[in-house]
Image 1 (tube, rainbow, N blue to C red):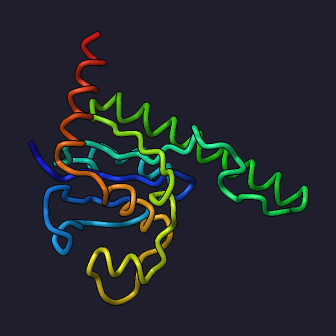
Image 2 (cartoon, rainbow, N blue to C red):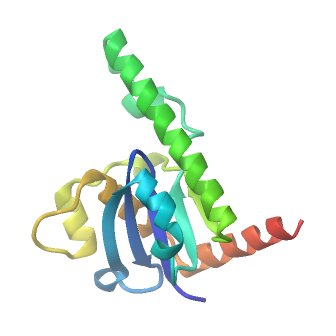
Length: 167
C-alpha cells in the first residue's frame, strides 16, 4: 500500500497536505498548499494522484459551542460564526461526495480533545522539522489532521470504503 495520503482542511479556502503516514517525522511532510474550494474541486483528481486515501476534516458532528466555548459574543458575531460553520459543513459534504465520485477512499476525521488544538507556527515547525516562515492556519490544520495517522489506519479506512462500495 502507498503510504502517501492527502489531508484537507475544508472551507472557502482549503488547506491541503500530502503526508507519508509511515515515515519518521522529519520525512513525513511531502507537499502543502492552500487553494480556493472551487480550484480544489476541479483539480482534486490531480491533487490526490498517487495518494492512498484522503483525510477530510469533518466538524459536522461537533456542536457549535465546542468551537468557541462560553465566549460571549454579539448577535452579529454569532450570526457570522454560524454562517462560517455552515460554509465549512457544505464544503466538507461537497468534497466528501467528490472523493467518492472519483473513487478515492475517504477518512472523515473529527478533531476532538488534544487533537482539536490548533498548532501555532512554532508547534508546526517543531512537528514537521521545517524552518523559515510557517504555513497559514488552514495548511497547519491539514497537516495536524494527518499527523496522527499510521499505515494501519489508512489500510483499515480503504477496506471499509471498498466494503461500502461493494454493497
